[in-house]
Image (tube, rainbow, N blue to C red; front, side, top):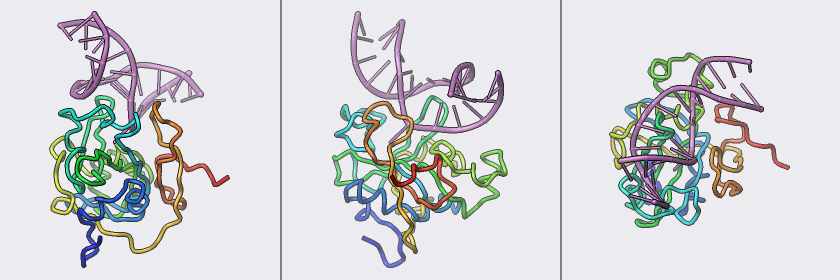
Length: 194
DNA sequence: TGCCCGATTAACT
DNA sequence: GTTAATCGGGCAA
Protein backbone atom coordinates (compact mmCIF):
# COMPACT_ATOMS: atom_id res chain seq x y z
CA UNK A 1 0.00 0.00 0.00
CA UNK A 2 2.75 2.43 0.92
CA UNK A 3 6.09 2.53 -0.76
CA UNK A 4 9.15 2.85 1.38
CA UNK A 5 9.27 6.63 1.12
CA UNK A 6 5.62 6.95 2.26
CA UNK A 7 4.46 8.04 -1.16
CA UNK A 8 0.96 6.88 -1.98
CA UNK A 9 0.96 4.64 -5.05
CA UNK A 10 -1.76 3.10 -7.27
CA UNK A 11 -2.32 0.23 -4.81
CA UNK A 12 -3.44 2.75 -2.19
CA UNK A 13 -6.05 4.12 -4.59
CA UNK A 14 -7.27 0.75 -5.86
CA UNK A 15 -9.38 0.22 -2.71
CA UNK A 16 -12.95 1.36 -2.04
CA UNK A 17 -13.50 5.14 -2.09
CA UNK A 18 -14.81 4.75 1.45
CA UNK A 19 -11.43 3.48 2.58
CA UNK A 20 -9.34 5.82 0.45
CA UNK A 21 -11.28 9.00 1.29
CA UNK A 22 -10.79 8.88 5.07
CA UNK A 23 -7.22 7.63 4.63
CA UNK A 24 -6.41 10.77 2.62
CA UNK A 25 -7.29 13.04 5.54
CA UNK A 26 -3.98 14.25 6.93
CA UNK A 27 -1.98 13.23 3.86
CA UNK A 28 0.32 15.76 2.22
CA UNK A 29 -0.46 16.86 -1.35
CA UNK A 30 1.83 19.11 -3.36
CA UNK A 31 2.01 20.09 -7.03
CA UNK A 32 5.44 21.36 -8.03
CA UNK A 33 6.19 21.66 -4.33
CA UNK A 34 3.13 23.80 -3.60
CA UNK A 35 0.27 22.53 -1.46
CA UNK A 36 -0.52 21.27 2.01
CA UNK A 37 -2.24 18.79 4.25
CA UNK A 38 -5.53 17.34 2.99
CA UNK A 39 -8.26 18.18 5.50
CA UNK A 40 -11.48 17.60 3.52
CA UNK A 41 -12.57 15.23 0.71
CA UNK A 42 -15.75 13.72 -0.74
CA UNK A 43 -16.33 10.26 -2.27
CA UNK A 44 -18.19 9.70 -5.54
CA UNK A 45 -19.21 6.33 -6.95
CA UNK A 46 -20.81 5.42 -10.28
CA UNK A 47 -23.73 3.72 -8.53
CA UNK A 48 -25.13 7.01 -7.17
CA UNK A 49 -26.53 9.83 -9.29
CA UNK A 50 -24.34 12.64 -7.97
CA UNK A 51 -21.29 11.05 -9.63
CA UNK A 52 -20.28 12.25 -13.09
CA UNK A 53 -19.79 8.59 -14.04
CA UNK A 54 -23.36 7.61 -13.11
CA UNK A 55 -24.61 7.70 -16.71
CA UNK A 56 -21.65 5.97 -18.29
CA UNK A 57 -18.45 7.06 -19.96
CA UNK A 58 -18.25 10.35 -21.86
CA UNK A 59 -15.25 12.36 -23.10
CA UNK A 60 -15.30 14.46 -19.94
CA UNK A 61 -15.35 11.64 -17.38
CA UNK A 62 -13.30 9.06 -19.30
CA UNK A 63 -10.42 9.29 -16.82
CA UNK A 64 -12.72 8.09 -14.03
CA UNK A 65 -13.12 4.79 -15.91
CA UNK A 66 -9.37 4.31 -16.16
CA UNK A 67 -6.91 2.87 -13.63
CA UNK A 68 -6.69 4.15 -10.03
CA UNK A 69 -4.06 6.65 -9.02
CA UNK A 70 -4.79 9.15 -11.78
CA UNK A 71 -6.17 12.68 -11.65
CA UNK A 72 -9.63 13.60 -12.96
CA UNK A 73 -10.09 17.35 -13.48
CA UNK A 74 -13.34 19.00 -14.58
CA UNK A 75 -14.69 22.51 -14.89
CA UNK A 76 -17.28 23.53 -12.35
CA UNK A 77 -19.94 26.18 -12.96
CA UNK A 78 -18.05 27.28 -16.04
CA UNK A 79 -15.50 29.05 -13.87
CA UNK A 80 -13.63 26.81 -11.49
CA UNK A 81 -11.60 23.61 -11.72
CA UNK A 82 -12.05 20.67 -9.37
CA UNK A 83 -9.58 17.80 -8.84
CA UNK A 84 -10.37 14.16 -8.06
CA UNK A 85 -8.27 11.08 -7.40
CA UNK A 86 -9.50 8.05 -9.37
CA UNK A 87 -10.04 5.05 -7.05
CA UNK A 88 -11.08 1.38 -7.02
CA UNK A 89 -10.18 -1.19 -9.70
CA UNK A 90 -10.00 0.04 -13.29
CA UNK A 91 -13.44 0.44 -14.84
CA UNK A 92 -15.28 1.09 -11.56
CA UNK A 93 -15.46 4.85 -12.18
CA UNK A 94 -15.20 6.06 -8.59
CA UNK A 95 -13.20 9.04 -7.37
CA UNK A 96 -12.43 11.24 -4.39
CA UNK A 97 -12.86 15.02 -4.71
CA UNK A 98 -10.20 17.10 -2.96
CA UNK A 99 -12.12 19.87 -1.18
CA UNK A 100 -9.70 21.59 1.19
CA UNK A 101 -6.06 21.77 2.26
CA UNK A 102 -4.25 23.22 5.22
CA UNK A 103 -1.55 25.25 3.44
CA UNK A 104 1.95 24.15 4.37
CA UNK A 105 4.17 24.47 1.29
CA UNK A 106 4.64 27.32 -1.16
CA UNK A 107 2.30 29.57 0.78
CA UNK A 108 3.52 32.76 -0.88
CA UNK A 109 2.89 31.24 -4.32
CA UNK A 110 -0.62 30.23 -3.31
CA UNK A 111 -1.29 33.70 -1.90
CA UNK A 112 -0.33 35.22 -5.23
CA UNK A 113 -2.44 32.78 -7.26
CA UNK A 114 -5.47 33.28 -5.00
CA UNK A 115 -5.09 37.02 -4.62
CA UNK A 116 -5.50 36.95 -0.87
CA UNK A 117 -3.28 36.75 2.19
CA UNK A 118 -5.83 34.99 4.35
CA UNK A 119 -4.44 31.53 5.11
CA UNK A 120 -7.82 30.09 6.03
CA UNK A 121 -9.43 30.94 2.69
CA UNK A 122 -6.45 29.93 0.55
CA UNK A 123 -7.53 26.31 -0.06
CA UNK A 124 -10.93 26.06 1.69
CA UNK A 125 -12.97 24.72 -1.22
CA UNK A 126 -12.43 22.57 -4.33
CA UNK A 127 -12.19 25.52 -6.72
CA UNK A 128 -9.82 27.32 -4.39
CA UNK A 129 -7.55 24.28 -4.07
CA UNK A 130 -7.15 24.11 -7.84
CA UNK A 131 -6.53 27.84 -8.11
CA UNK A 132 -3.87 27.70 -5.38
CA UNK A 133 -2.18 24.63 -6.91
CA UNK A 134 -2.59 25.91 -10.51
CA UNK A 135 -4.54 22.81 -11.55
CA UNK A 136 -6.30 23.03 -14.92
CA UNK A 137 -7.55 20.85 -17.76
CA UNK A 138 -3.88 20.21 -18.59
CA UNK A 139 -3.57 17.99 -15.53
CA UNK A 140 -6.54 15.79 -16.37
CA UNK A 141 -5.45 12.15 -16.71
CA UNK A 142 -1.98 12.56 -15.22
CA UNK A 143 -0.53 9.91 -12.87
CA UNK A 144 -0.47 10.91 -9.21
CA UNK A 145 2.71 9.01 -8.34
CA UNK A 146 4.91 11.11 -10.62
CA UNK A 147 5.88 14.79 -10.90
CA UNK A 148 4.53 17.39 -10.62
CA UNK A 149 2.53 15.54 -7.96
CA UNK A 150 3.69 14.37 -4.58
CA UNK A 151 1.30 12.64 -2.19
CA UNK A 152 2.70 11.43 1.12
CA UNK A 153 0.86 9.35 3.71
CA UNK A 154 -0.13 11.05 6.95
CA UNK A 155 2.24 10.86 9.87
CA UNK A 156 -0.37 11.17 12.61
CA UNK A 157 -3.95 9.96 12.81
CA UNK A 158 -6.39 12.90 12.82
CA UNK A 159 -9.80 12.87 14.47
CA UNK A 160 -12.13 12.10 11.57
CA UNK A 161 -15.37 13.93 10.83
CA UNK A 162 -18.09 12.62 8.50
CA UNK A 163 -21.00 14.45 6.95
CA UNK A 164 -23.17 14.90 3.87
CA UNK A 165 -21.62 16.17 0.66
CA UNK A 166 -21.84 19.84 -0.25
CA UNK A 167 -23.43 21.55 -3.23
CA UNK A 168 -25.25 18.56 -4.71
CA UNK A 169 -28.96 17.88 -5.17
CA UNK A 170 -28.93 14.17 -6.03
CA UNK A 171 -28.12 11.57 -3.38
CA UNK A 172 -27.73 14.55 -1.07
CA UNK A 173 -28.28 12.45 2.03
CA UNK A 174 -25.25 10.16 1.66
CA UNK A 175 -22.64 10.85 4.37
CA UNK A 176 -19.71 10.69 2.00
CA UNK A 177 -17.84 13.83 3.07
CA UNK A 178 -14.78 13.19 5.21
CA UNK A 179 -12.61 15.65 7.09
CA UNK A 180 -10.27 16.45 9.92
CA UNK A 181 -12.61 17.24 12.83
CA UNK A 182 -10.05 19.59 14.37
CA UNK A 183 -8.97 21.55 11.29
CA UNK A 184 -10.06 25.13 10.78
CA UNK A 185 -9.14 24.97 7.08
CA UNK A 186 -12.22 23.05 5.91
CA UNK A 187 -14.65 24.67 3.46
CA UNK A 188 -17.55 24.42 5.90
CA UNK A 189 -17.71 23.19 9.49
CA UNK A 190 -18.71 19.59 10.03
CA UNK A 191 -21.82 19.18 12.12
CA UNK A 192 -20.72 18.16 15.61
CA UNK A 193 -21.31 14.54 16.48
CA UNK A 194 -24.88 14.12 17.70
C1' DT B 1 -29.32 23.19 -32.43
C1' DG B 2 -31.33 24.66 -28.17
C1' DC B 3 -32.00 24.53 -23.36
C1' DC B 4 -31.23 23.64 -18.59
C1' DC B 5 -28.37 23.20 -14.86
C1' DG B 6 -24.35 22.29 -12.06
C1' DA B 7 -19.23 18.19 -7.01
C1' DT B 8 -18.50 27.00 -6.75
C1' DT B 9 -17.12 31.42 -5.30
C1' DA B 10 -17.29 36.15 -4.04
C1' DA B 11 -19.81 40.07 -3.44
C1' DC B 12 -23.88 41.66 -2.09
C1' DT B 13 -28.14 42.98 1.31
C1' DG C 1 -29.12 34.87 3.64
C1' DT C 2 -29.18 35.89 -1.42
C1' DT C 3 -27.44 36.16 -6.04
C1' DA C 4 -24.65 37.06 -10.26
C1' DA C 5 -20.86 35.31 -12.95
C1' DT C 6 -19.96 32.03 -16.72
C1' DC C 7 -19.74 27.89 -19.92
C1' DG C 8 -19.46 23.05 -21.05
C1' DG C 9 -21.93 18.65 -20.62
C1' DG C 10 -25.91 16.00 -21.30
C1' DC C 11 -30.26 15.35 -23.10
C1' DA C 12 -34.48 16.49 -25.81
C1' DA C 13 -36.10 17.69 -30.32
